[in-house]
Image (cartoon, rainbow, N blue to C red; front, side, top):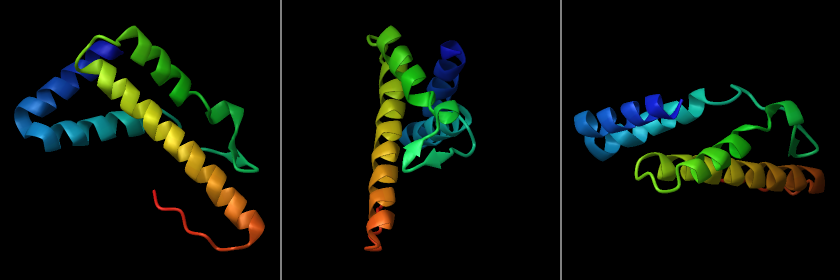
Length: 103
């Protein structure tokens, strides 16, 4: 529901400035997907792997929108970073080197 996301983001910016916008974007992101993701072998399970794809579609659909375009691209970046961190953490666990990955 892009119109709802836009309304929340714009209102949060009006009321709370950059910090308000950051907080509402974070809340919208947390609410848009599974509350817990399942992984097998460091790879997200298919049933939990939809947020990045949907955000990528939305980012393309709203590419020229100054509010929604950056928001959906940000979600794609977070999902990609999470996927990579999970992969690296799994590889580290399998190697037994105790590497800690910062999120």
